[in-house]
Amino acid sequence: MWNALKATAEVGKHTSILDLFAQDPGRAEAFSLHALDLLFDYSKTQIDDTARNVLIDLAKAAGVEARREAMFTGEKINETEGRAVLHTALRNLDGDAVLVDGQDVMPGVLDTLVRMGALADEVRGSGFTDVVNIGIGGSDLGPAMAYRALAPYCDGPRCHFVSNVDAADIADTLRGCDPEKTLFIVASKTFTTIETMTNARTARAWLQDNGVSTDGRFFALSSNAEAAGDWGIPSTRVLGFEDWVGGRYSLWGPIGLSLMIAIGPDGFKAFLRGGQSMDRHFRAAALHENMPVLLALVGLWHNQGLGQTTRAVLPYDNRLSRLPAYLQQLEMESNGKSVAMDGTAVPVHTGPVVWGEPGTNGQHAFYQLIHQGTRVVPCEFMVAAEGHEADLRHHHDLLIANCLAQSEALMRGRSLDEARAIMAAKGLTGDELDRQARHRVFPGNRPSTTLMMPKLTPEVLGQIIALYEHRVFVEGVILGINSFDQWGVELGKELATSLGPLVSGDVPAGDKDASTQALLGYVKRYS
Ligand code: F6P
Image (cartoon, rainbow, N blue to C red):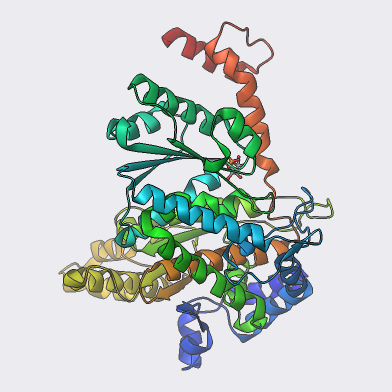
């Protein structure tokens, strides 16, 4: 299955993207896709018709269509945990039946959405000035990312997001809050995560130390209602969800409560509508006209085909500053695996290393490497046609110009002759001209994609997040892995638990390796 991709990529490696444009005046349109409000342009890559056909065949051979249907219809495709994968049910606003073990999950989903709306309205009308979401991973990154992204739509209390077990996180947050007017949301699917439970206890102690009753100050968002009850949160303030919602896919349900409090239930529903419309597109569109499928295939082309194993996510939108971190978890926790569903080793690299920063800031930091470094980093640009600051339109025009300039520069590059001409015009000659010109050469032919949106509204954000979720799903199916477990985080957790007493107590660290013992010794000297 991979041989055809590798053989095509071997040719693609030597293809000039500029030549592809020269040979085909219709390339920009032929290698772009409009779906819903979005435009996905992948024409500035080395993918040609042959490569695209090979990629589509790869998706077909891997059974993407059947697997997609299995996901939407509640089959237990998370096989290592024996669970269905139904975050799509959380945005199935029309309530069409979705069966798990013969039971329709939709009445429960819609009932929870109504409860979320009532609680959000209660908080929005209650005089609380600050809401602190305590959670980590998927119980933090989703709402934290979306809260920032949708700042122009936030008209509720201020929201804060505490995730790190580092006391600095909660201490710095609470310093700016009034205990009388602050509400806490403990967001944890399992309600056992050590960071979250530690922060929640600290929040409770903060209220008590300030003489404020903890009654009515905590919500729990969890699949483990029993543990939330044991912790002292009454069932009326617990919003539950099922094990078929993975942590990194949970923003659409109760884990989105802070977002709903911030933008209101109607805004949150618009976000869900956006996700639902992308679900419909993904489920119905043919593979070659399917945006999540094409986005996945472009990723596979670069990573598994061309061996370009990192991916930069570069939103030209300051409010999407947490999107790279959000997508990092989505992609790397989902597809950072080595073992296929059947227990065999995956024969190719799996998920890429995802990283990024908003433009234009990144341009003044790491773009040097992207333009002139020795590695090729496929870049994923993203920008809205319109910003929210109508009276500052000139800022937005500059933002767009910079975004387009970067993809053009990566593709076009600058030859030695061009660099020499520039340096000669500055008056350089001879050896000095040669030497200086070489530093100013850009290899070019570096691939990028651009995702364009009209404006970053709640509905458009919903489309984008669902687009990336389905992209990760398609990549996972083609790689033959389970994108919905995360066993790779367990070992570190176990060892942290065993190291805790060694750090804080006098327990001898004799069974630890010499490096760990020495590091513990250093801590002991200073603590
Ligand atoms: O350790 C990884 C992880 O399980 C993520 O998958 C999850 O999003 C995060 O921890 C938080 O888990 P929980 O919501 O159960 O606290």
